[in-house]
Image 1 (cartoon, rainbow, N blue to C red):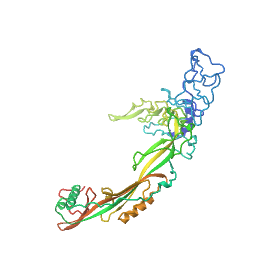
Image 2: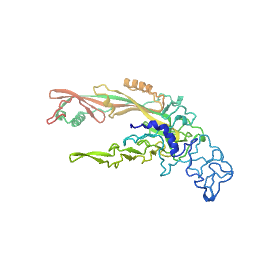
Image 3: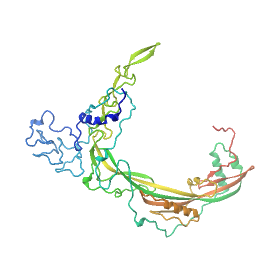
Length: 491
């Protein structure tokens, strides 16, 4: 019989889970474990109290446990009504619970050895064992079950970007009163140029060093490349619903007050001009919900056997025997994997047909809250002015002299640099650094002057050039004349 997909039995699983481990909770709870009176009578020989036989009242013959309601009448609305002491995190007030409060009756996994037996609808025959069959992944709670939080409308379980509040006039850039002078960079000598070329040749196995040692320089033309960089350090915020297994941790819900706005929560980056991210729980948005995947039982149907507790042996394909070729003839032998029965106990659920729910980790409840994600992003753009045949991108990765640098909430474009193209690039990039979904915390721009020397030389009958650039004296020599050597092979 063909395998039946897991999704087909999702509806029936609800009814099975309710009957297999406990009834589906009403109003978000589930029956307390170990409540009073226990099966078989009342401890201590006591009798059921008259007039006070309400659900949840302590009815034992001995002293009531700490936290049990001991009144003579029905318990007040919202009071904890479990038969034993209230679990950690349960609401114990004498009146109705505050708005948004949830009195979870547990927060602990089901007792050991209490794995329920799956009893819902399942395939008519055992399914073929597939150890690689994907297990059921956690799913998000239904959005309609989430609480309504003022100021956080229309959010789901995926990030929702939030535009920052409007900037005031104080953040507008102001022209600086005085700016630093721009200095020139040093030039290199013929010895510097030859050493740079020898280092370049040493990095290439097929280059001979004879030309670098014997060439004669005819001219050294020193120029400067200009590298303008603009950085805008912005902060973006997004919110979404989040959930985690509830194990009794404190719940800061709407009963503690209204939730602050997403941009009212204080958050600071550890380092300026470096990308980073932090997550926060928005205060007063948490609540406890019964797990929607397991219906607050802590277990779901096994994904490997679909609840049957056993699978067909994949070694003999359920026949119970295998055929082996021995001494020139085929023999039918008993399958030693399933001992001839063709079926094996499911190794995933150990025959129960149920496994621990991954959504709530078996704890039966979920803590739901609004998560705020603060992301700091350093936006960087640059512009390079380089007049020689040297590729511009090489300037970006070498050091030079910082001729100008300013940092401010909003920087003013450069307007005093002797290279007009740099001034124009500064105006253009600053105007383009507009990020509607982020708040700009700080801006920084600088101009680096990178020395570039075009080295003209003659070697034998060849006249060519190479370039030395940066304070590291990097070399660029695409026309090096001695590019082959004996014993070299190209694979």
